[in-house]
Image (cartoon, rainbow, N blue to C red; front, side, top):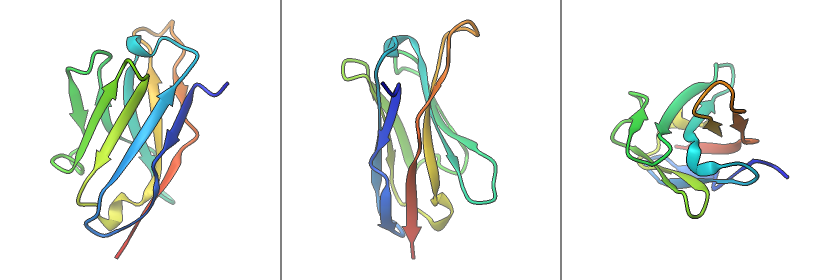
Length: 119
């Protein structure tokens, strides 16, 4: 059983939108903060957005503020990343991450989903 499964990536035109989903299983999703990271070719993985366990606090990288929205549905055990006005520099593999409330809890990573923005 894979703890986190991402979906929704693909090829999109410059200025377009995509919504990524990350569905969890096998752990207490509602106790975990959820984040989206991305890694472009030749670059380090970077944090894109984070949402706390109850969905009341969000943080964004400066590069995506005003364009991306992170959300979650704890009943569906799913986190989302709505990406609008996509730019070429948003091209990357996007990963979701589940962060436990303390270091004693295991963190989880998804397998990644490719987002490619074409001009």
